[in-house]
Image (cartoon, rainbow, N blue to C red):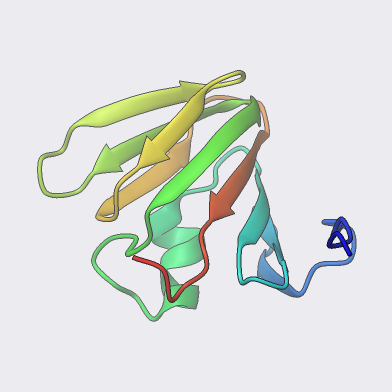
Length: 121
């Protein structure tokens, strides 16, 4: 028998990282541990202020992100080198661990991120 197709919706996430009033990340997990995230960052959102405290205040974001930008402009900075990269609508991206980020301009940023099962390397 062929396996069934698994579907999830961001409207009913397994986990919600609430960064009121400036953002939220809805997280869904598939049976194999693969995760999908829908991130919304409002104008004025900064990783340092809005997300860092929720992660236990690491010096930079410890996660690697693969994703797609649906709307808005996000500036991602590699903390060690200070190199900044601008992401905009239509960009597919790969961000290494060790970054922070902020919303650039008056438009809301919307991203979809993908993460492999946590036990995979």
